[in-house]
Image (cartoon, rainbow, N blue to C red; front, side):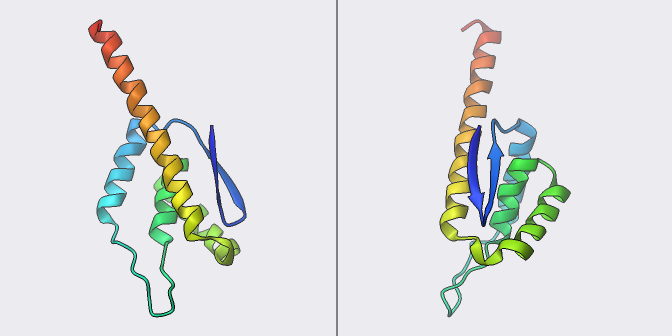
Length: 110
């Protein structure tokens, strides 16, 4: 199980299901590249939602938890934390793909 922080809260994630990967792809297609404003700030709300969608695999729960997280921990959430969370998700997705490929090879007798 992999862990990461967002704000002051720790989240855990293991393998990601193929259904969750489909949801993540759909979410990423709807996202815009974050832009840095004149104060050096950027909105990472979509990124937080993407990360929580990977954790919970449920759009409504990811939105609800993300809203609570931003209300309670906004000042503690950093871009570094978001980047680390994306890296953790990447590793989990990679693991799921490797398991799927191993399963397919086993079925085909390779």
